[in-house]
Image (cartoon, rainbow, N blue to C red):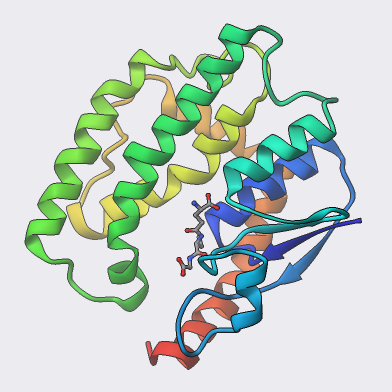
Length: 225
Ligand SMILES: N[C@@H](CCC(=O)N[C@@H](CS)C(=O)NCC(=O)O)C(=O)O
């Protein structure tokens, strides 16, 4: 059986977790809060070279990087598919998923240390983040109308990217900009409400909420905040 290493309040961990759940694939969760640093477990680096979560343990070995894990899951378990059935459709789903990760998640992530530590962001960084998020939010309607799913008429990897990577943008916006940078994206709010009704998304959120205080306690023990 597959083993998914990581923790349930990590958005990156939840990406393959939701894919596995949606496909009905059996897997075991192995709680792991790791990273690179003197206080971390060096043996985890054999599973994920930069000490990041998630890592998927397969019969052939470990895979890190959520995108590679998704690719493996999709290739190894094609049904039910989390991709459209045409090359163009597949590329458009990947385009949207990559857009969400590069221009929203990785931008908002710059302020995660401030969110977790309760500290004020550097004003220059905050301005850069705000400009980048607003630019991405203005461009997002070019890739999705959010009418039904993020792309096309089926649940895909693009939905997984949106569901799991956009909440951090809202959290950062609320905490440091006093607004939701995604508020004006047409159709997005109603789409997100619909997605939150999905039973497996509810499970992801419930597991995340349960793990969150434990993760915070782990950070406190490690960094003192
Ligand atoms: N590119 C990686 C990013 C994974 C990632 O950044 N995970 C975070 C948790 S949400 C992590 O492990 N952070 C610890 C660290 O970077 O040391 C992926 O797609 O899997």
